[in-house]
Figure 1 (spheres, helix red, strand yellow):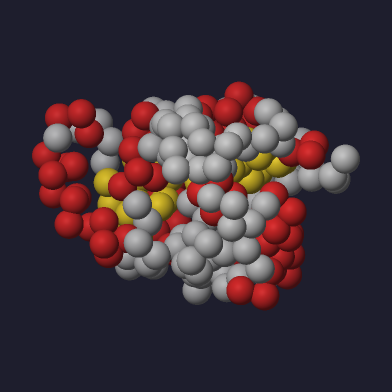
Figure 2 (cartoon, rainbow, N blue to C red):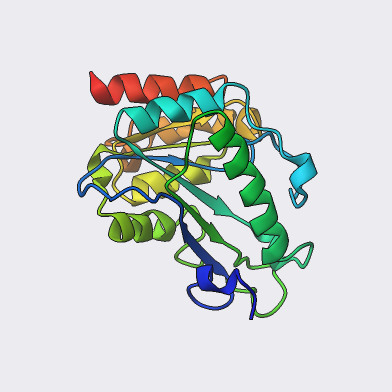
Length: 223
């Protein structure tokens, strides 16, 4: 049995890892972060610790969120696992590197959630529209149950419209699309999204860089 099997809550494709050893405070707001293109620079199907590059300034921004009492949770789709490009051991090694680099800069994550299911995946990962796969809100809702989070006070930062849609579907206060990763490719859709009545109660901000997005979101939440 792999030492990582404890985090696979369904034994196959759903990763749920608590990282904070501090006692949880019920009702905390959460800063939800996509991983690739937000927390770390986009690397096509990141699978090696040597390829990890923290986004510029993100460690200091996360440390500020830690100090402000926000939980910080990574929510990431991992279709590379579904496609057979790498496995959970490689994912775990990359995550350990990210956590170590953040810790060296005085920052921490409270949890990491990942979904490996994808409609083009190899069996048993070939599940379309799994409730955990963004834009569906399953990862965010699971984190809320696991950590007693206050979702209506929480925000999400991502580089895809699907990240923001997951936040909207989970009832978050709002989200930010960053221009790193795939963000600039997704930005042309923003006008249509903002004019859609279904998005009326979910404000969307835009930021050039993830660290800027985190600091702006914290300032707005604490105002």
